[in-house]
Image 1 (cartoon, rainbow over the protein chains, first blue to last red):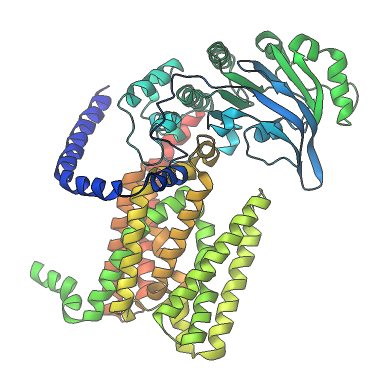
Image 2 (spheres, helix red, strand yellow):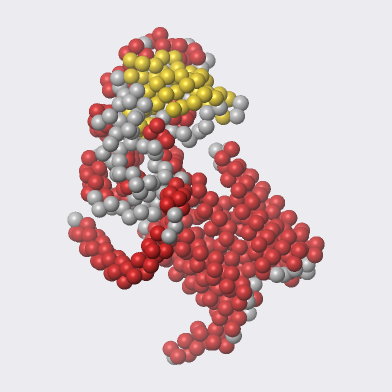
Length: 310
Length: 289
């Protein structure tokens, strides 16, 4: 703990230094403000659009309001080169729903999530999602896609979740430190807040990403195999977080392998094998008949199984 | 005794204006190479940087063909082909998501050979050596102004856009999702890298320009895990290597560009041996827990 208080003292003297610099440059900054106010509102809006993610100063802080978390998918096809990873997917994710996406390997589950997140462009069909357009969609890729060697602390990583309140160039809000602490405490990592992410275990890192999602407070949360390589207790804890978010009105879509967990925790399920085999109530979607059909659709040997507990 | 040492250290710079200009030029380059090199390293794009440094070559050679050994023509040509290759590489990355070391290396070999052919067709052996290895001692006041202008602009841009630049190198899909405009910042960063390589080109040549950018940053990364100290340390190491390299080249009568790069390389080697153990051990034990 001594270490921590040292850090706090250092930060305090640093903030003294910053405020000193701020007072010293006040006349200069006033000049600059006068200079910038001459720019038309158009120029300011253009700056915000290009460098600050469409931040609009006239818009009130929208952290409290919940937008529309619905996603409409119409005849969606996505392919890499010749190969079609997804073909003719049509359906809806209702607002405040909690849907598991399951299917054999190569069924296009990750591709579907990437298409929903607007990362891959569809070859045909479309995805309608107001949350995406409003930048209120959160997407958690498979862990392998993130650079764990990047020099950033857990606290800084979590703070990024509040991006819309500080953006590229604005000053972070005063309450940021408090909300970061709160989010980190929720996932049980208070002791690690000043650790580099390279020093975290796989499970701790995934908890940290969930804390960032907590701060992000998006209308739609897309998760690609969020519980892969996690132990039971961590998985249960993070699952209960997901349920709390759903209750708050967030739309949850998660790619999962563990069918037992899906049956227990996810009200609806999309069974995918390049195109939807079944989409709706979990108990109906995951019937033995549907699972067999999912295998047939991908040309896998009959009687083969996927998932940890089928 | 200490007076003698001081004389040994500053004598050459007192006596010769080309030494002074070379020192100021390499200090200015170190100032912007610190943050740019650190960011490049953090993005794991050092190979890309190397390719870009060679992409400057054909354009500079074309400039040479057109206007002889003129700074403006060389820089403009280098900037042009550097940006074109960066754009092509970006398209390439978008269309093929898998690793592309091979196509990058192909780029680098072809543009290097192309540049050498162009210079050799018109110029002398000395011109070729200039283009390949640079001549930091031949930097004149105009070149110094160009270098200072580019490095000042680089520092201002990085200071203003540091947050999105850093986040984009860590988690580009996150930045895009929260509306931070990911691709734009990537483009800005690559443009900064090309600009700095063009600035270094005159002093270090196309083969060595990436050296003063990457080696100090790599050395600094051995000592600290935090970004700001890393940038500060990389800048300081870059300056120390420049000073040491210039002195060595003066007293031992060796080419100055390679001497500076070897100085930075020595610091990197020492850092690896001295600090590498300290950095890696806790990490490994943490993972095994």
